[in-house]
Length: 118
Image (cartoon, rainbow, N blue to C red):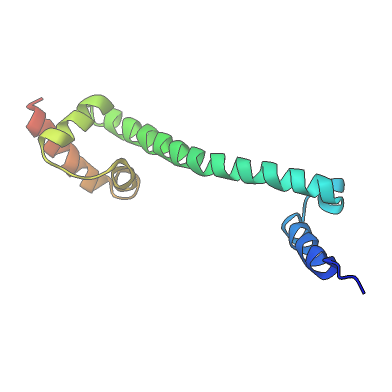
């Protein structure tokens, strides 16, 4: 009696179809299309995990820039002043402070301005 890989193949296919759940039309039902779609989905996921980091940094910089302009200092001056004042806060935490605690951000800006002697 010959042996086949029937059970293993079915398990492998089932795994692929499970990952393709929620896809539209043949992208969920046809094996070849599912394989292609999952490959592409993986590539997009890989690319967009990196893109999300860029988008968040862009958001933090936009928020900081707006908060700095309200306090009569340019973003570039603010960042340079942070380095001079030895304030080791990153853009993410600075943006959070600017949004949630304006008084604390005012204090940071005052430190930066004194370091720059504006």
